[in-house]
Length: 230
Ligand code: SAM
Image (cartoon, rainbow, N blue to C red; front, top):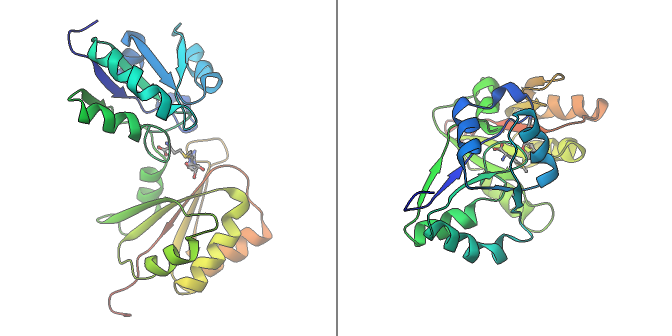
């Protein structure tokens, strides 16, 4: 154990297990403690990596209660690695709360570069990548319409996470709140066996996914509003 502790956010694969980095494997082997969003999910990954370590649960239902004891462990010199079920901790996943608490307590935080769903989706979309906004999951009920109204003015490329059963509804709302010919890209099951990338207008994509209800995990990338059109 070091004299000063450190929190290390460790991204894990979003589908293809080959996407774990060599550094992530080493950090997971060396950490004094590994926090996992779902210990059953992460223990399968650790088994695959041949890492025998006990995992501590750290998820949205207990993170408020465990922060102070984790801070005290870090102050004692622990190196704590944090993983979520998939991708980068803190990105639509637990991680922010403990990161903020570490910063407030002058504890070092590091995040390894690695898998996350939003970046490959943006890069493969063919839409402008120079400037973009990550919107994560839109509110499901309250606040959804307000958010969509606000985003209708957004000029940067937008990246959304969405569940498969809400995809068609979401695309129909994009054509209602934005323009029907706004270009978009739906990325399904990135890095997995049935990866699918569909590009088109929000209307075309709505028609396609209404006729072909999707399964799996989804990122939607939507172009920003054209300044000329405004
Ligand atoms: N921490 C993760 C990250 O860094 O991307 C995100 C976790 S969030 C709870 C899960 C959402 O991420 C899914 O509903 C989907 O929108 C997106 N996602 C995760 N894996 C994906 C994949 N393989 N293909 C497409 N989208 C994915």
